[in-house]
Length: 79
Image 1 (cartoon, one colour):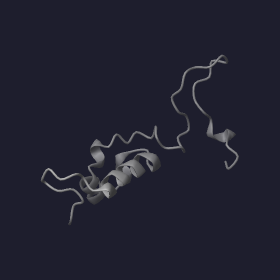
Image 2 (cartoon, rainbow, N blue to C red):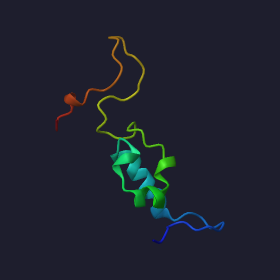
Image 3 (tube, helix red, strand yellow):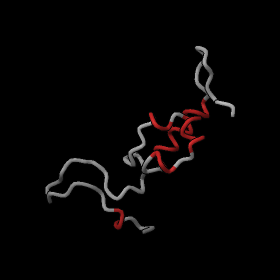
Image 4 (cartoon, rainbow, N blue to C red):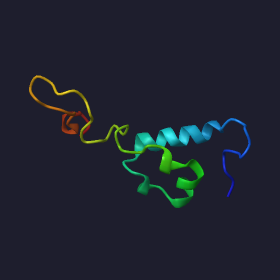
């Protein structure tokens, strides 16, 4: 298995960063990925919580005047 980042002081490969960003935007937890991907892209430290995923049922935002907190996906046109 070849890793996209080296053990030297060289900068990390841009594909490594893109994979971590994509994982945060598309997943809800680290368990959705294979052991190889978790190891290759250090996904256990990527902060995958589902908050960056647009398909999350609710997102954190301030409580509005109607005492609602979050965005209901059922309001989206494609749902």
